Image 1 (cartoon, rainbow, N blue to C red):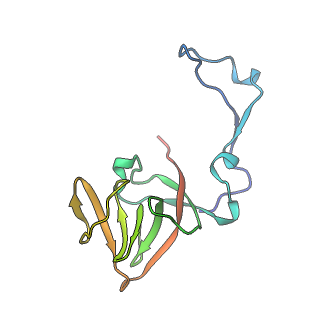
Image 2 (image 1 turned 135 degrees about the horizontal axis):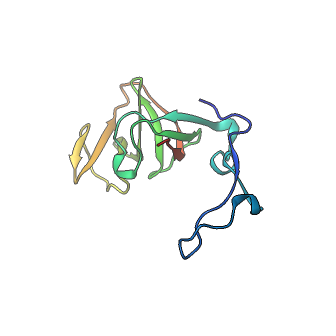
Length: 145
């Protein structure tokens, strides 16, 4: 899914420090353009849907929509990938012996077999024999309740 020219614009409102509603939003002047807030690089951005609960501990659930920007990842970035044609997302970690997708941020350097459960962190070891493609870095997420 690609973002369109205008997604949604609304007046920004919320609660004050005493947790009381702010005045009527029609009386407020500031607007929040969700396109500008969520999509910083429209020509490099896709909206992809998360499949599975690999990142559930990071608050990303099955069915969530991820904003993915086509860029080269750094260690610790959440990336959206295809591994042998299957979509997945995880914390990117590149080491001398391979590329890993971690289900939690901040895994230390050590070898892991595929989907080893180490300290409650699932790890997907990406072997270069299979087809592996990084679609981009996850920069945002949204869901509908």
